[in-house]
Image (cartoon, rainbow, N blue to C red; front, side, top):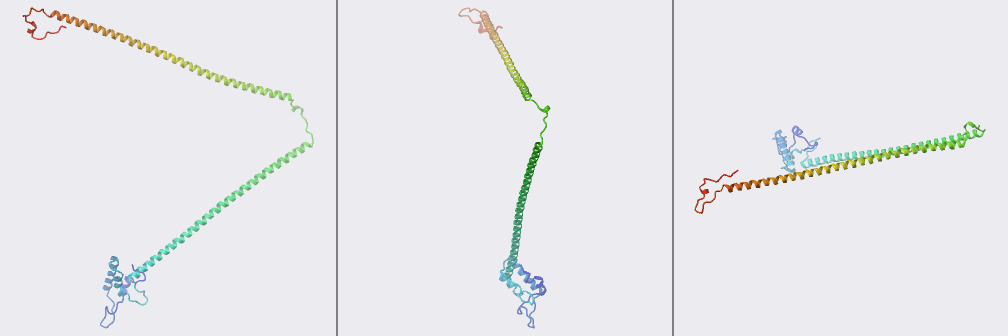
Length: 300
């Protein structure tokens, strides 16, 4: 990486670097500038050494040593170490500038948010004081109204007492109720209320008794129905057992009859067999059974 203060490749190609007199000498003994092909070859070799890293700083400085001839009004060409140092300084300078800028922005933001927080706290405090002040003013106003109303009532009463004391009021006989009549009225009202309460109590008791009677009747009906169901089930069970007993007796009689008939059949069969066998003719006689062609068929 070449610094901006150093000569760029177009400047080198345009003006060309100076070389010592021993490198290229004319017959007249004066130095001659290198050709464009020499400059291009030197720059290409320098770039290859920078990219590959095979050459050190000394090799690059040696390749550019012939280009370090000073010219009036131009900065000298830097070596690789100087370029690296310069680039490092520029990068460090930019880093410091950015860090300083970020720190300044952070300080500004901190002051801004701090002032904003303080301002909000101040506004909340002022609002709280303003609310308390309004409440105090309203309280004083309500208290003053209450005191004014009390004073007005007191003055009105004093005025009424003074007006009543200034002359005697007339007594209207038609509006005077005897004390005995008042007592009788209250007693009649008490009796009427007692009668109404007694009627309500009687009604409540009657309704309760009706509900209790309904429940008792329902329970008795359920008991009667359950008894009838149980009696019917018992009768059906007894009938079923009777039927089972009758069926068992019939089956027993049938089996006995079958066995008796079987015995009679066997007895008649044996008697028939005994009748079919001929009597023997003596010890020397041959049995006719030996001359039979097969077994005798059984009689039905």
